[in-house]
Length: 242
Image 1 (cartoon, rainbow, N blue to C red):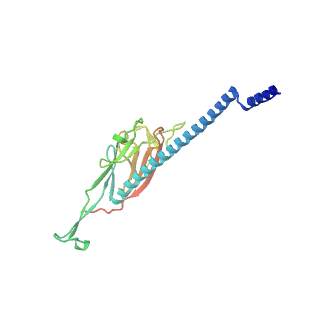
Image 2: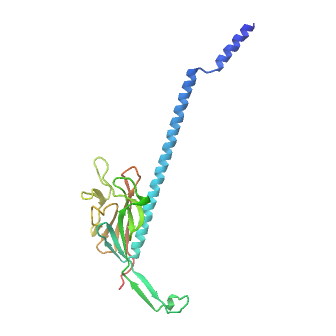
Image 3: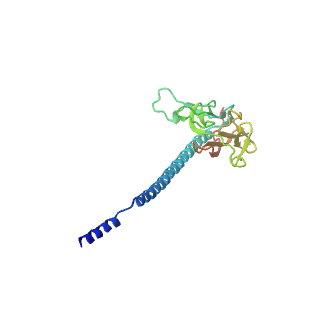
């Protein structure tokens, strides 16, 4: 009777345990599940990071475009730059002369008004240096205003796909090897120098000198040659003064 009980207990213990093969199979399955879940999680994080990066780039480009457009509206003349210069703006300034010794003068106290039509602002393309430099080939550029930094990651669009084609609204230029805006009749593309100047910031300046189509192209990401475009048509609002 005792031997029979021992046999039943022994069988019960065997039925409750796992074999080595079962443990190995379970471990492999668990490893696969964890690996797949981890890969999916990392992929989601990378996609989110890429989307956030692209959103930030587009925001920076739009802010730069708005800044330049607002300054054009304050100008009375737009003219093409030279070499890598994109354009020059003539912005009139007003000086009010008040009587000497008047405390807290108001416009009603003004003796005279003087207009200065010599204030010039120049927008150019330059190399991205310092913390703005990157390792892309060719490296991206930056937009400067009278030599002061405005925005980085400016990059001229290039032909892509099979066959190679330029983005909509642009045409291929063999001299610079990039895609440039197709300016409307009555306007001229600036910068004038196709080699040193055409690097992702363009202005189609109309013959009247009071209208410009602006085009900014920025890097979509650090690991692709694809670019994003922001553009706007802007008119000057200031009147010419003598």
